[in-house]
Length: 270
Length: 172
Image (cartoon, rainbow over all chains, first blue to last red):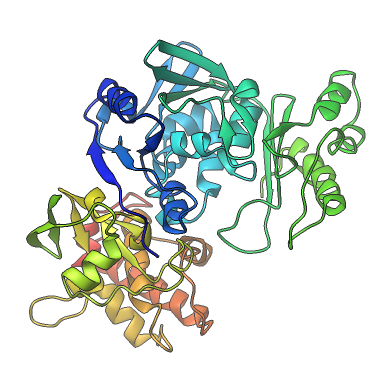
């Protein structure tokens, strides 16, 4: 399968990328690792006229501490997030989640910013950013804005990112000793979560339980009022709207959400 | 657009369409046919090659993305005198292949895995190859092959713990 023809531009700075987006308008798409975009282009679900390659912009990549946050450049690859000793110490759930994405080859190419911008409700990193209560930095023609994870995802494969904007960095709280758990239920290696649950400091986020990654709000409220893990986990599917496919129907996804939330609240990974 | 890159140690310069996939560039422009097109959807790993020493699925990389970088295919693992790499030799000695279609991808993924994790456990080998499918289901001997290569490589070039080694050492 071969993508439709497009023009290829290489950005040499974030400003250059933004000016190329302004020049080409909605016909342009940003290319980083290309592991969400290129598969869509190959089956012609996406046919951008111009690709703006941001993978060679060095200042968009890297991991650093800034006050009480860890800042991860948008084009930092999953393999580098997973292998970062800084993240393993300061935000271990994020390093763990990055290691669950796809397979080693995919983690050598795919980027944290690309995964978040793709906004797949079944993916690892959107759910994890939501659990962490992190945020993303977005640059555009009118300046820089920071959007919290709760406000970033608006629908399946849709975020508040505008066509002329560039996601430049991801911010997550430092919390090396915060209790966390992570559960991803799949039937095959290298698959998306049939249901996923990420728990961080009393925040519970679900994957594949609706059109966006979702907070398990009823579970969180129950925990705050002193409910046991079992009582709180039993509420995990409340307010969700899971779809159905050949892996699972909505009822089964609800069951998985309750079981996996209990395990994640117990601090388990898997 | 013109791309300049190193493929199996040889500097190449070619005019390519931006939409040309790396796997098609390797197979059709350069006539390097080791890497196969299997699923064509980033799943099966038959098209795995090394990009700057790291495994990637070349059906999901544009040739222009490899501009200025170094690509290694299974052909590039063989020395000028025909000697196979340690990983290739281990696949041969441990019968790590049946029909052979997945083998070039398996060998490249294993080469990358051993560069990152020189002393893998069996579990780490299995997880490290989760992006490569063998539809003959010959996984047991593939895993044995990688463990045998790891042992041979660590005997040849001692390394402490899981410190990454240069991919060139594993390729050699």
